[in-house]
Amino acid sequence: MNKSSDVLERTVLHPGKFFLKAGEENMRAYIVQAGEVASVHHTEDGNAITVEKFGPGTIIGERGLLLDDVPTLSYEATQSTTVIVITRQDFEKQMKKVPKVVRTVLDHALKKIQGYETKDSELTINQFDVDELAVLLVSNLVKGLSDDKKAIYQETITPHINGLIKAIKELKGS
Image (cartoon, rainbow, N blue to C red; front, side, top):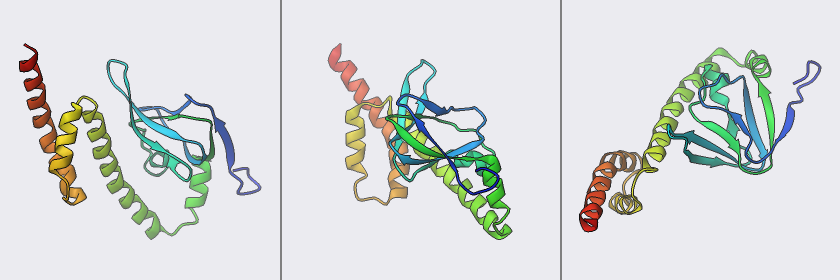
């Protein structure tokens, strides 16, 4: 925002442009106005795993502004993407206008959401190394369960089913 108005900066990100990097300090949030952004996890061996894709209306980097938190994933434009940039200074200026009780509620809600996002990311990253047959089998086993129970069962059962399927494939191959 410039000092005389509440107009936010817009910028275009080109495909392949990483605008937030895991582990680096983040002083901005971005609202996707047009295009698409992917959250990416980089493995130790250099592979990139796309965790999730985001389109128009999505806010990226808000945890950094609200919790002073560094991102755990990197974010990349997957196509030409227009974003609205919210700097820490712009955000803090607006937050001063918000009642303390609202800020407290936002803080607690965000911390809960942060936990859910971490679990979802870990599940996606762990499934990268899981045989497709194991994913299909576990998906069928948990059909009809509530989302909470589904996640728990998937997280618990998938490694065992995956190990079993890999062992069967090794036996067939030998």
